[in-house]
Length: 163
Image (cartoon, rainbow, N blue to C red; front, top):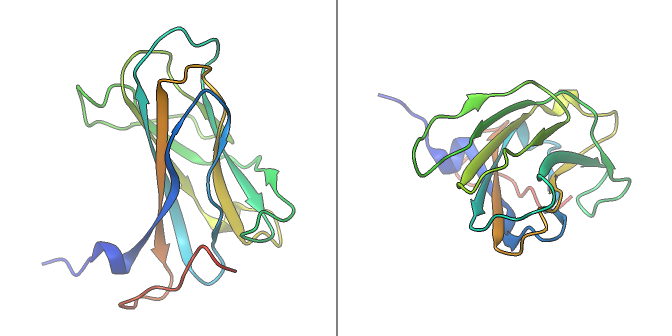
């Protein structure tokens, strides 16, 4: 029998409330210092309309603080997975490791997962956030959560949205 408990073993933090992708979006920053071993960003994309002029590109920004101080796009090669048709399948397919991941042009709902190891980040970086470029279609929406592997198991893991 497993002793794994989702709220105690993985801290869940909202990265992006559902938001239209007709403009670039930046998620909330989370503090990794003394909180996370690894972090998985899971984004769900609702593609309700076609006609966009560009494919959305996901990335990870790193910062010195959860307020975004010293924010810059990470150039590290993170592990990515995606499911290009969540209404038809629950299979996440491993993608080539990289700093970014481009969505597949389609009219289907999609899911993207990025694994971030704090050891990959630049020296002094304590916080990360997810970013996504625009699709230029207001009917396309994205939402995301961070699932943070807690370093110290406890009934109430430490806050990740404060420094």
